[in-house]
Image 1 (cartoon, one colour):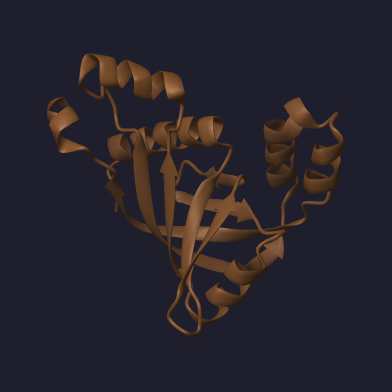
Image 2 (cartoon, rainbow, N blue to C red):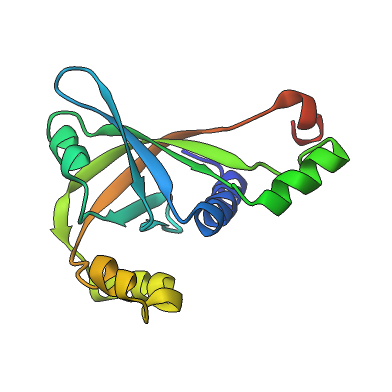
Length: 162
């Protein structure tokens, strides 16, 4: 079980990472033992230390989780301003990335609340043709059980954090 203070911090780091990068990456393993990384912009962390994501364009990920539901999700804040400030100061004031070690569940219909959440996230771009082509048909999600986590660290610039 992840401590509540760590979970709140994970949610914050994850949110900043998705805001700056517009996605997080999910790594799975295929039937030949080869890793596959899938960028997903629709991962949502719940308050109860679970998550879900809309599974619409994830052909390889969907194949891989059938045989092995274990995965690693990585989210990194890629904001240029965050990194520039950190390099100028010579330290990170907060964690900039996290890896979540998870198990991905079966495909299921999204709830009305989940569809509302993805609509809120994509709303700023809903007027664009690309948004309408990519984000207008989200109907199914996969639940994520989070087993453990690990902060992404650069120790020389993070001594104040541990």
